[in-house]
Length: 160
Length: 147
View 1 (tube, chains in turn red, yellow):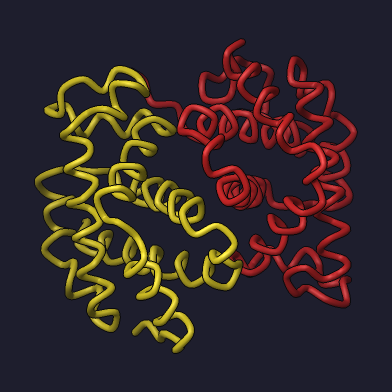
View 2 (cartoon, one colour):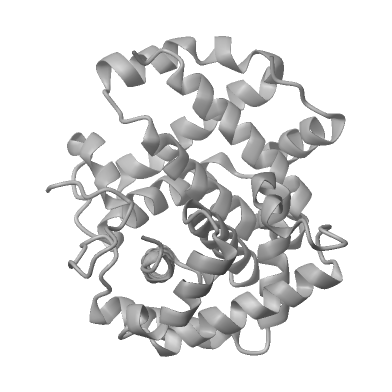
């Protein structure tokens, strides 16, 4: 087996690390249905954790008054992120196309180092494990990890 | 020299006193093999690791998971000397086992997820940060003897 690096190429070439099988897509869609109604709680917790556990991510939010876990700007941003991820689930068959404008936003305006996408993804997975300890099985975990990597890939598309 | 706050020390020791090493070890290690399948390359002698079901029911995976947790406990018991504690293990992973050290944090991620699912709300962002710091120190110590 040829090992393909975690970084996805900024091209439309099929990358085995991030292309989602039909089973992956079904698993993600089925699991994400559990999230309905809990988006704010989950989003807030994921962003709170990211800022606390990986303090380098705070550098992107110096314009917020309050960076503490559960603060108003954190809660609001968590909701924004979750809305976007839910949207990505609905566009799972064409993430690159579906997330084009979000990619432009991150590339040209926000200029977030794409390495941080993995960081937020990891924290989201941790939260999902706390909220859905029984449903977040290894099989769901790998499908979600692949999905979030594919989302990160799509977000990186416009960077260079 | 790693400096641990009282909160961090307590948080780490608390986590390890609460978890069942056999259960958490098996769950974390099997999850690592399932979610990051290239890690299977180091366990050719473990028998059937073909799919998630095989990995989850594999007795060698279960016992090795427990071995990993017992090794982590050594660091918990002497948090100010983790580098020294793992000097031999680091050489082992580098020279004999030849494990790509980037893999260490993959197991760390899976362990975090399993601990999170066990502790639920008690795994607050602050406790999570302490655990992440602990894992970073462990991984760094395991990387020390690579050249």
